[in-house]
Amino acid sequence: MADGFALTEATYYILLSLVRPRHGYGIMQQTEELSGGRVHLAAGTLYGALNALSAKGWIIQIPSEEDSRRKDYRLTEKGLQVLHAEVARLRELADNGERILREE
Amino acid sequence: MANRRTIRKWFWVWDFDKEEDWLNEMAMNGWVLDRVGFCSYDFVKCEPGEYTVREEMHAFDESYVSFMEETGAEYVGRFFMWSFFRKKTADGPFDLFSDIDSRIAHLDKIGKVLTIIGGANLAIGLVNTFNPSHVGWINLLCATLLMYGLGRIHGKKEALEKERFLHE
Image (cartoon, rainbow over all chains, first blue to last red; front, side):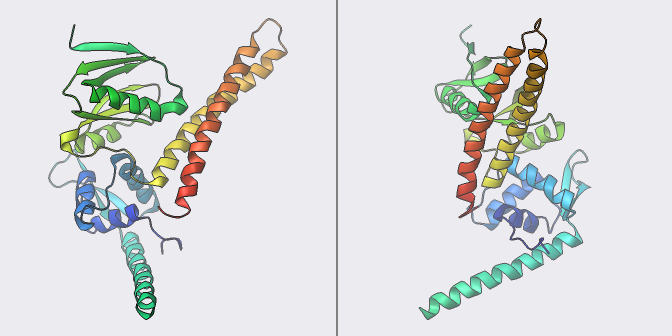
């Protein structure tokens, strides 16, 4: 579980991007693409988040296959669980919103 | 030399956002930051608005610099604990922080440094007030100034925290 707290949008999209191994710039591009350009991750914010997520054990660094100097990141088993729990939480939010607005 | 110029200017550390605004104004006018020093900024000529300039307090970290470079930014240099970056505006928008949490974390970092230096000055100043041969009042003055700066940083942080109460 995500410590019982909601994930930030940035954290959510970073984790979602890392279901496949990606490097920093790849995460930025994937996030922009997934959100249709709505969510933009700035470099400093992303760097801080990657360090924090590594410390929590939700992601790990792996050597890049394309470029040995580069570091890629990938979701851990724990990170995947957090992501599943967050999707369930978001579904609850969206379902409740739709149901109540439909009734009005 | 018409292609380079140095401007001497002073900014308080808690006015880092004003410093950044000024550097971007310079870039708008065709002068982009090329080197930083103590109260000294070197600029080179560029097309007006060719670059966006950003600055951040950060312990030196080579992997952070290469991370930034990978995203298309260029490392300009460092002064004290501040790193300066620039990026061509044609390569997309350039920000260091894109959410409230990371802005608050940055202000916390600045606050911590001000607290350490201010606290050291306070301690030295107090010790030296008992020693008539020393000028402990200079340290006490520095400590007062740094505590004022800490208050300014705290004010910026509170404004962000109020905003975060409603949204990210």
